[in-house]
Image (cartoon, rainbow, N blue to C red; front, top):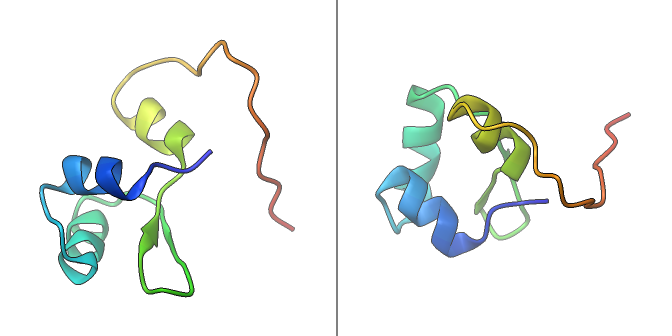
Length: 65
């Protein structure tokens, strides 16, 4: 569902959450901030952005609204 903290750091190139958030905003990646101030990025968003199709593995889907 969401990238791990390590995957967010690898994607952004930054370890500090504030730097990660800045990078995600600049690159226009969708994300939310959790209660600890960390960026939460959906795995599907990254896969779609990087040109990969959705995973064939069945995972829980997030429903907003």
